[in-house]
Image 1 (cartoon, rainbow, N blue to C red):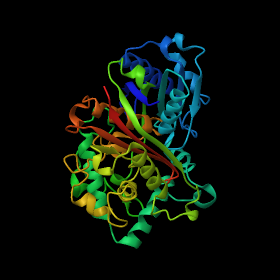
Image 2 (tube, rainbow, N blue to C red):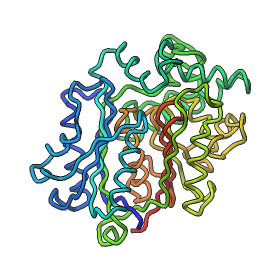
Image 3 (cartoon, helix red, strand yellow):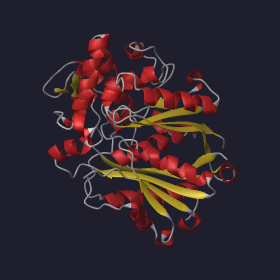
Image 4 (spheres, rainbow, N blue to C red):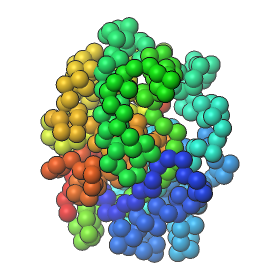
Length: 387
């Protein structure tokens, strides 16, 4: 049985004044059902992706989805979490529910981060690392990836140009994304140079190398392919793979992102395609160094040569394989629980030809990589429009 996406919704990402976690969840849940052309009575199961880790005073949040409509009462609802890949964990749980016989599954991902004081944000995010080794890292999770970037530079040389090119590409792409938090084309020079507005944050990473602190939500409606073909649109999962790696970075070569590599290899094999068959990829650029290493882990470049992919424009929107046409986490924002669901929504929009200004021409197959921690939780989906 093939699970399909038949409806979706996406809030704006950013510092959303006047919104609450509950209002974000209910907004996208309501809109996704309407987009699919179904009602609350049709829903068989609900999955909520919500990381929290101190961002929300309200925990035990699965039932907040029921606030969207009283007719959702008594539907099974579960919250899942897997760090920054929480949204994709929710999607995968929804797929498994469809494969187990549930006809309609509503998947929601949400996070409200900006109401938390700055120092606490860093502390909360650092909980997605291995605290016995990384718990005292300055600058929080940015510090963890700053160390990764420093180690990469030591092994392969200074990659500051490539990181700036990735940042500039994603900011340029995000200008045309109405959901994006930061819709501004900064250009290569601004991203490359240290300045008062673009200071170093951790190691060689500057502010433009780091994803944003965000509020936001996204939702999907999943069903089986037989049902989907009778609906308005059907975006099928050609593959959906999950690979979990060790939490301590000391137990692996962190510059390899081996979990990412294994997940991609499994997904491409399951889909019966090669990387060259993809029209575009949405990948997890929590930091620009992550996108650079992901080029290598997914097979776009040999180890240590990811910079060439960035500098030659291969991953630009008009390149051979556009990466993050949405603007990625860098421009769009990164509300932890919503990110993976957002990536699936935006990929489905591309394949349905409904992506507006960020539309990739003639998009046929879309790839998604979403990770939690430093390549610990690794999820790859490959989507294909069948209706």
